[in-house]
Image (cartoon, rainbow, N blue to C red; front, side):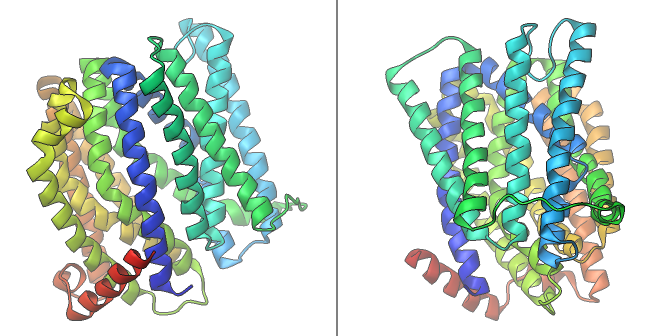
Length: 437
């Protein structure tokens, strides 16, 4: 499949995946109420940061080494199995220590052993999903990955729809457990398809000291950068929860989740840009990157203008009047979300080129700005202040990446951001193939 065909097929399946997950979010916000949805959002955020910290950047290492063939694939798989075992061991020990001091487990609040076990299942699901996402993308199996995720999400939607229409349970922990089970189901589905349907058996290979060094020499820098960037994404969650409580967090999390829907296309394209840039057999990839950036910019401008028009009547109608206060922070987030979309695409390019210092500086800049403005604005302005702080930080980071890319390629900002005639022709081809898909 050629490059444009890959993009179109991925957009089609990812669009289906997004639509399904919007309906899942809608059902969860109604089933769990604002307070319960805040608890779920915090669990997701905490598991993500723990996975990010404990995985040591291995997901990026998988994609890079698989795409560039710089390390035998069996050795990469062996290393990743040890990484997952390490993650689960660290999580178990950490939870036991945390409970001994606080009387409650960390990931899922409660002092019964079942909270630890369910937390382990959820973390394992998150870790497994992230690892196999990297395996798929490193193997250039973009379409297969998005197809499987769409199928898995459809099954989850059926489950939650059945609960919403036929069964109503008041216990928030029931929905947490069900959410964890659906996450585990998707993780297992990914792993089974990768190994059996793609004829990639689970085979191990002895790993030498140089193999470990080669793998982590790349992933460790990515690991530090990812931690900093994730803190920039999630420090507002913790501060909103600390200063304003679960209900405010539930309102804010919906605003963030809705605004981050605009990152779906950039993240999808970034997942393709990274391994293809890392593949040494593909030359002069900069022209493809700039074309994708220009087309993405135009699409996002149109989408965000439309969102501004329909947000006020749509959010309370779809999610309920309880989420009326999510509209203002959603609107304030949009400018930063737009500029950071360019950041996402260019960061994937620099990762593939192994110029990781650029991503490190951009992430550090983003985190420093968001933390400073969060501490300044959240205590007084609550979720509105959190949205403004994030929007400013995302904008600063996005402008930094635009400056670095244009300076390195000795080009003007207009050449990166403004649509050209050949882009229109390429976009028409994409649209035509998308409708066929």
